[in-house]
Image 1: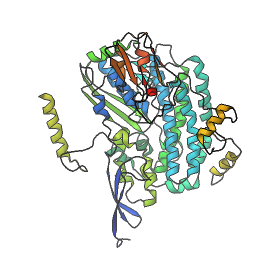
Image 2 (image 1 turned 135 degrees about the horizontal axis):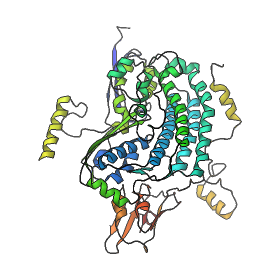
Image 3 (image 1 turned 90 degrees about the horizontal axis):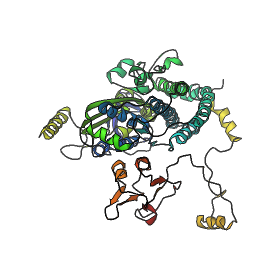
Image 4 (image 1 turned 90 degrees about the vertical axis):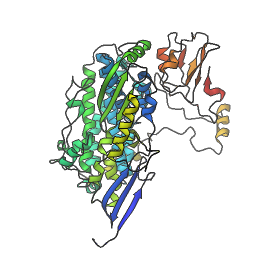
Length: 406
Length: 134
């Protein structure tokens, strides 16, 4: 073993095993991974730059497009930040509409992930089954918002479309479908011998590592960390209902923090989301859904607003964090987006260590990475594009502060 | 309990209808335009397209005569797809740039903007007549 030579294998930025561009560099000895390094920043799109040249009413639709899967989470986080700065009170019913859409998004995102995970294991039968089941959530979202993705439903100060009473039976039908499918999905994913063999004790992230690496969302919960923004700092309508962080011990006896536990957490979150939507629908208050229907008023309120705020939302992949600073002009002075993968990606270095080459795809996919949401920076001048040291970043930030002060 | 629980599920699938949307023709025709001509002539049948959801946001329609030129739609358009024409005090909308959020519909004080059901907008030219609404 030890006398085998060490090879350095680059994978990416574009590679069939990767869903999005990112560059991995593996030090491989035989079949075993010795060390991992990765370089994100390959899909930088300048979203923040675009945002700082638009007003908040325009940015909510730009937020929809940060991520194709967790569209409403980004928009919700941004809207919450702006609402805090401008001191806009969101109507009660709008909170419920936002939460219901967010939960449907969680269902479709987790089922999408389950399908991708099956595909990465080479189990394409299950991949197609999971994606067929996912269509039901997509159809309901389309029925309620008009779009399958990029819903465009959240607005600063509320939501743009209300749910009417005659839409409820369609939502209930979808929920019943998922309730009937739960046992089947659990059997298909969790009792399958292949999946057990490939996923159990693979890509283990211990509770201590998960805490030290600041992981969020299902990745952290699968390692046994009890954290969920919906329960810890309730936003929208989550304060009115009972939300608990789902840990893998709902199914297994012990928490290992392996890939199998991440499947368990995501599947049982789908189950919990169905329950949450039912609770939300039962206690939906009456209209209105928008704080102010005249957009000119929203625009002028946002223009007058001064201050800074953060918006935190539990996206399907973990905590999504938006920082907004407004200074009394049309566009925000500063807008920072931190997607959940930004927090989770460092765990790759730990969980890939000592694993086999064949397990790379499933372990990389197990944290549900979304690179295009994460990439906020790409270096195009001054120095090497690969590495930015702490000193360089510090120097750059000092320079920028001076520039702003001048 | 089977060790391969997906197997009975796969067997059950064989008896079920496909869940995917059907291709317009039953079999791939030699020539698509030929097939469409046949459909127009009533010689062949076409699988109907998937029904649109209610409140679908398709290609924008614009009623120039009611427009008062308030420029609110230009201010709220996230994609900068709307251009104001000062000579006529009307707007011009570039559909290739449009992201179909329908925000301009909501903001318009005289409701001269609407979303139609038309969604087949593919074209080789960004500035073709079909893709500029004014």
